[in-house]
Amino acid sequence: MIKGTQSQDEVIAPSTRSSKLKFVVSAVLMTLITVVSIPAISQWYSGIKTVSYAQLITAKVIKKDLVRDVSVSGRLVAANAPQVYSPEPGQATLLVKPGDRVEQDALLATIHSPELDAQIDQQSSLLTQLQLESNRGLLADDEAQLELERSLDEATVRLNAAQREQLRSKESYDKQVISELDFARSKDTLLEAQLMHKHAQKRVSMAKKRLDFEAQTRELSVQRQTQILDELKRRQRALEVRAPVTGVVGSWLVQQKEQVADAQALMTIVDLSEYEAELQVPEFYADDLGIGLNVEISLGGQFYQGAVSSVSPEIQQNQVAVRVKINANSDLKLRQNQRVNGRIEFEKKAQVLQVKRGPFLSSFGGKQAFVIQDQMAQLRDIKIGVSSVDYVELISGVQEGEEIIISDYDAFSQSQTFKISK
Image (cartoon, rainbow, N blue to C red):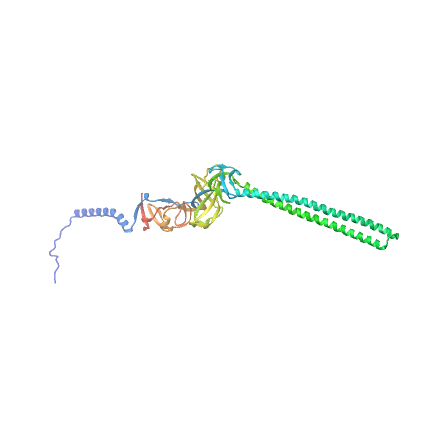
């Protein structure tokens, strides 16, 4: 059996002062190492980043009324900007220039139409001819009337003679002076005279009706021709093109002395008393549009209130055309097709939590946001509601007064939390 080495060992008495010094030095070094290394080790272990506050865009959660709206652009158009047209084919002579101010019914242009002048001359000659024929017909009617009246008078004379002859024959027959045959003959003569007189009266009556009808026919022919000539003269007067409204000449649509067609546009007259804004709204908001929505128009650094007056029923190039009636004073200097910006209000919600819009909405689909507390940014789940041009509603996840990072999250989108340095 092997014995231990106790016999070879030498007991050395420890130095109490040296041991204490070494222990103190070791403890101090360990403390320094711990103080310096623990934050670094902690950050390395947990993956926490440090971001400068100056690199971030933040906003406070506030509670106030939120107006759901959309910002759009468009142009000014005159609410009443009619075009004037050529009423007839011919040569146009323009009497005003673009920019000239004109009053209603002022003469703007004249149209020279040789074809219309020729038609007026022809119809005037035809009217004169019909009037002469009507007068000639009146003379012929008077002659026919006179002839019929003469026939009636002759029949009346024969009737009177026959009546006297019959009376004389009756007296003679009663005195047995004439025979019964002669008396019967006188009766027949009287009856014949009565029938002729009756027929003559009927012929005169029917002739008067016929002559009246023919006279009316001739008169109607004259009236019809007169109406034709009046219409041609009205068309001739319409060759003097006049201003439908008081305003400013916008632009010429034809050249001076140009040969124009019927109903061809000549120029535009802009009524400066009332303007509208024509705004282009994205198709996304088409279902929210409606007549009467409030609109704020920005023009020349000033804001004017208006309302939607019409909405186009069709979509062109992913845009919906909206007409807005502007409540502006008459002293406002407006120009046709002047560019404007507008803000259409769809809905107003009272006293809701909201924060300014920012790129953070697209980082997590609007479902998460970094909230700052004690120089630390913590990712939270949030729920957003309606939005306006400047603000977005926060339904849950935050409280009033908290500060949210609203800038882009690409630099720290993989982190749940990070430190913010001043």
